[in-house]
Length: 259
Image 1: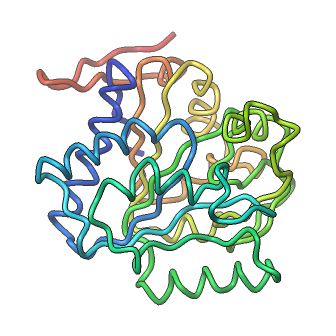
Image 2: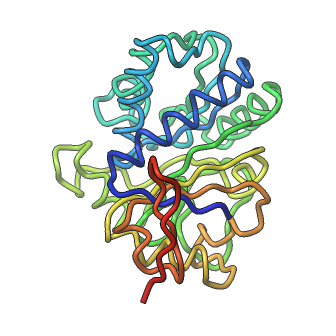
């Protein structure tokens, strides 16, 4: 894992946006996998700013959303489609025909999951996948368990996940859907490159276990150790429990040993 640590969450967001913008220059037809949630909001805002300044061109790119809630329409204010449109897609030149979402209101959710896998394959697979990490170590909506599903699938959300996403539903976890559709761990690990973003002390324990802990389905993020091209973008707080970490800035890296 390539671990990059920054002084602040704002610096993390700027670095992640630059990473995406540079990938678009190298590969204009980039296929992106994109998460929702609070962590990527600042990076998406920076991507919108870069695009407005001519520094991020999505005209030939393709995007796949990582997950969606079950039982709500795409236009529901709490849907991840609404979230992604508001925070990113309305502010960049990514063609609507190449933006892909899971339909949590589909009549046959199993068929919907298979459709999504087929669509990803038809696009040539995901080149660059951005991920967050839940406090319980989930990525996407792959929750800890005795086993994990490899392909896009239907999942029951953990109570902690419902609390973390309650802001999308008026702050009330009881109003949150209890299920979601998510890319599976196999789908995630098939991406060419993965960027995991984490900020804040609440994520430090999960980051530590993902980097230093054993591989276990009880911490889905730990399976990223199996991937050959994973980059972690962390602020100081999220990196605080790592054995060693380095702060990246204009002057290079400052090696720091953690307690």
